[in-house]
Length: 330
Image (cartoon, rainbow, N blue to C red; front, side, top):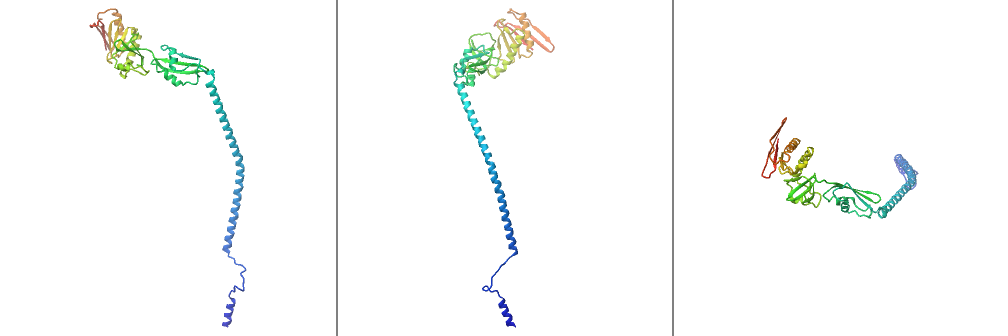
């Protein structure tokens, strides 16, 4: 029996020579294969989906690209035409004899001759109206010390208009015997003269003589201290005009800003105004004394005037110079 069982076991052994494997399957492997297959199918579908729109997008994008190129070409063409048109216009304006300067008109000038201003500008007749620099012409004209400001305009086709604002002569500054600097109300030096013209003369200035005589440009001016005093001088002259006594003032001493002194040449009198506070009252009493003592070379009588809180005392004396001295004290 044992022998039989052994034989059966031996007989039951797998014989590779006599038998064949028909098939072998594993459920897990089959499931994985199916998954892989499904994934690959999905990928292919997705790829196909993505591919189709790209072709469609490319087809749609092509006309858009062409439209953009057309717009760029049109824009470039327009720009080139515009440049050519501008270039042609500029050439016409610069070369046409129609725009050659035929006339230079100068306005609002009184002290400086029109021909002098036109010459200073450097603008040439019969040259093209567009080929000169206005800024250069203005700078050239403003080198004249009498010129405060300049405006230049082109009046097409062939006319230039120059409008000048001049400085006005206000005072003489005596810097040496018989030598005067003519200045305006802002303290700018306009000219040097040895001729005594009909303007109030300022004496006792602090500005150095070297500064006053240097008038190569239009920026020479009194020093800062003198400019401050110039405001007071302007008030004295204006108040004197209001009381009609400005015509008597020939010199104003500004050396002491606490005691401005007026020299009245024709009347041969000197008036000490003091610090010029309550200037109206001081000038009013100066006028009263002048009216009372007109033509006299003797001391004026003592005048005392009381007006509320203000006490004005006017005294007179005759110094060695022969001038009557009027001292007005508040």
